[in-house]
Length: 634
Image (cartoon, rainbow, N blue to C red; front, side, top):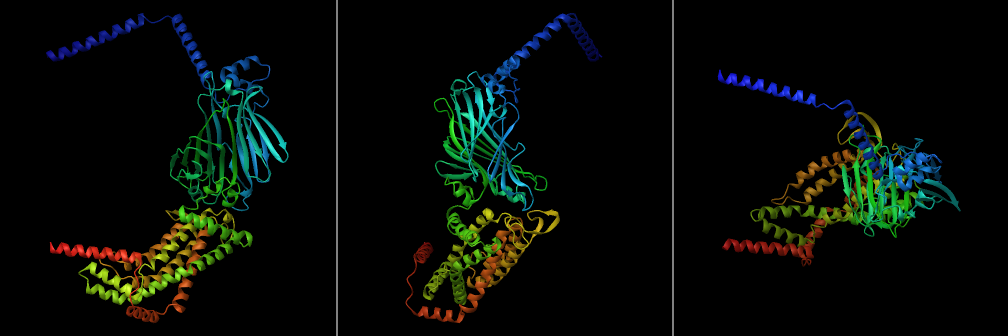
């Protein structure tokens, strides 16, 4: 009872205290006059803070000042400081200036002074006959901005300010001057220079008289961004070859990569390329940017939904002051990602084309590109026929290597019974078996590596083709047989559903290539299995080859279904020719009986001097055998 009584007293006490607090608060409630005074005081403070904010950061879109309106001019000066002058000019409205030549059409806005539309007049998007020209820039997918730090602590963005345009012609060149003015003779200028029949646009960026307006203690932040439009039939294929490529440290070229969200910070950058599959927008500078921040974001998460854009690309670089002013001579390139076109500028731009590194790149640059260019441009063959003849010539050039490979396999096949016999004789001594096998090879004049080396030589050419055909701009929208575009997939059936890894269509050239590689592997697997007996402790190659006969065609079918038809056509013709060459060599050049007789004759002769590789291998085996004997004695 005592505990309950205590709880009740506590409750009553809390209620009384709460009531007293309410009464005190009511008694001390401010009068209406006091409340009004406090409200006015708060509004004044808020207004002062807003004015301070305006003094340090420009509004998104400054108001246009009507000439002679001193009130508006005073307000603009609070917002823009010295650059309020630009808002008083007739150009301070959303007008545009268009310059164009035979190849490109550019639309430059007064607001921001940058290119808001860039159209390539010779190319159509998606497919030939679509009637839609390739537009690299349109509908605010690009942005160019310089952040200006003024000496009165304002941060202004050029994208929000109005430039004054002046268009003139010097000879056949069109020159558009866009000036952001802080006074009659104080300005930041973008100068666009467009020559006839040229994808390259001059872009001079300099200031005059702004050393008294801008804070020159640190460089200006220059930001360029582009949300890349899809221009090809396959958005997945186009996205795969879209990234940022750049030249840095006097000639090195690299890329940000193809990840979902990638970033690089190269130094001494001389150009930045927003490269799409077949078209590029490139910024070049005469004075390398000392630092940079390049960022790429993948926008294609689901190709059935994300069908408009491929990637968001952005570059931030510093613009350094020289004697208190900005002075850069730059260029914009709006045009095809075509090796020959880019190489003509002699600025290392052709390196943005992914032709492969090392020997793969050399094969493409010095063999594939010149040969294919000769067939398609000089002779003037249709692109499909050019691919077929190109493949035939490559395979004929490689036929001596193919012959040596098959001949080596035939010799190993003849020796297989004796190698098997050695395996049985020394099955408990793997090292001894290897030594005796090497002696047999030496007596017979057979090099077990002779079959592998020719095959290895052909691998770089195969890999080079995987780089060459997807990058060959010549194939874009060129038809052959049922394929309306050799640079994209040759769909003959559109599926009502999407198969993971395969896609929503059936391409015919990959099916033909898969069938050809199946028969090629079927014909060669028997010889390879008979030529190479299984070694103790090694995987069963016969079983692996049996699986590969079926796995390789399926992988090719899946991999090539969404790739360009030109690459599938090349692989189909290549495997078809290899089958033909192999048939001719086996039928007319390789005689197992003659090879056997030659091997037996070689055995009776003085053994040939071993090659360096065989000598080294023999030495290793002998050392291992000696160590083994030594260990047994212990």
